[in-house]
Amino acid sequence: MILRPVDVSGDVLPVLSSSALLFGPEAVAQLVQYRLSLLAGEWWENPERGFRILERFRDSWIVSSDASSLSSMITAYIRETDGVQDVADVRFTVSGRQFSYRCSVRTKEGSAEVAYQAEYP
Image (cartoon, rainbow, N blue to C red; front, side):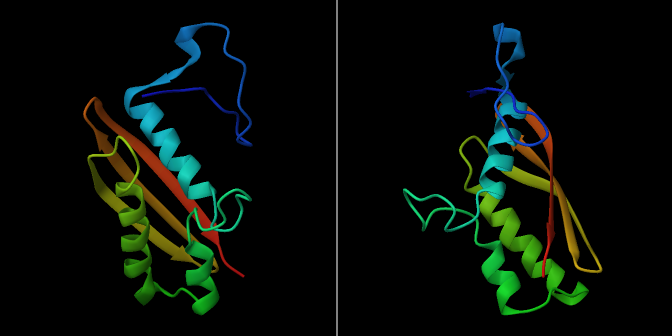
């Protein structure tokens, strides 16, 4: 898998040489980040496509006892990403209104770290 790099706000950066492209596990981790950041209903062409985490937050507040099921939901969503063979070393925390999640995605070329944070209303 090969992807173009993005800046911190998610804008695609110009590529002046092939060495600037993302390959292997880093490309897969970036694809996971893309999928986590596209929320259901945001893509006009296919509003059903996207991550449904906001629906989970709409149903109830997330407390420490719910964090495990939310983590499982995120892990299952990540496993559906092209190139991901497994998800390991899952860690999550709830602090106030913020849920933080980290994991290692394993690909056929190696592993890469993925981090995700969500703040709910």
